[in-house]
Length: 256
Image (cartoon, rainbow, N blue to C red):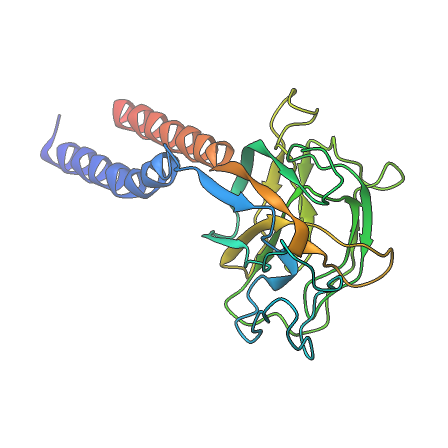
């Protein structure tokens, strides 16, 4: 091998590792994600609403965006949904377990929810049609969501349904997650695209008492879901791209 070819081979090797390292980092990120607890009182329409104060039970509800029943013993305050940092272009999947109660007369139900709900938008966060008492999510940027909301997604049997393989929600659209599988506790994991322009994923639950009205009635909820956020599909793609790139460079070195 001539000195020129040796130098070229070294440069190709160096370039391969410089390009490979970020891809491998993306592939290994969150390889063992910690579990998150999403409480039944985590109201998804409070996502990003740092401008809203949650009033006491029986307190003044002026300016509070969620619906509530009359104050009664045993009620608890709504809580804010859990936030997770995300990167646009990621592909996420979820696994959720646990049981929650969304009415004093209800039996516990899993993350796929139970009674159908149809709630209106709050601020810049869209309404929702689909199973209530379910694990849901919404992607947001760093701003308080006060702009005009996007269109509501319909997860009823007449709309998208809940057994979809993949979903690409827009920023501000509330989307069904459930237990993260195409069936109830069975089936392949569903995939969710992280849209452009967002920085955060909020995980919460969906509740409401009156169709085509504000979400709410979280104050009599109890229980929680244990949730894992699993970006393996994106990581696997990054790993495949990385190793494919390395193989191409190795072939190029042999041809030099």
